[in-house]
Length: 235
Ligand code: SF4
Ligand code: SF4
Image (cartoon, rainbow, N blue to C red):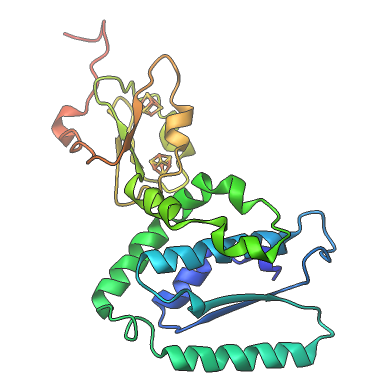
């Protein structure tokens, strides 16, 4: 596949499945046959991934991207051999870094769940084209990544405002909204991928979805209290 199709989630999945290193090979920068130049996107994704790895205590050298043409077999062999040796030197994922395997699994699962959110928040940077390799390392900063995770946004439906119009549930890409006719809608926080769609589509006359940053989400309204009794239908 095009290197631009290699999602951050794929890299995290490889690590979750026990890989000790991930290599991504892309066409040479500026030699893409399409206007999309997906290899720049792949580069940005890898730079972001490396900083996220540092954030969770993993050695960022476990992920590498290189650009080369299909005619450069020798270069490919050299790079793969060098990377293979590097990964061997780093040893099993997490062990060298001193992270407990269960803790590592849960950290990777937590980050994987946030991938759609990360992509929305970092959308602009992920789409940019870095021309100078000297910019690579400082493109995403440590502070920026710390902030990304300390200010994770959650979405909550205010039971006082929800009118059960069902718009949010129909548009939610993760089927994370518990929805039924005349029932106050509730977000299943376990399923929610924090894409913000419900926040955007809830009609302005209701504004029932709120964004919560860096604070716990209120508990969901109990099931027996979710029925909306419309005016004129009350006995
Ligand atoms: S933010 Fe809203 S639309 Fe997006 S996954 Fe969560 S509940 Fe669904
Ligand atoms: S779009 Fe808004 S009002 Fe409609 S069901 Fe969802 S939260 Fe409730």
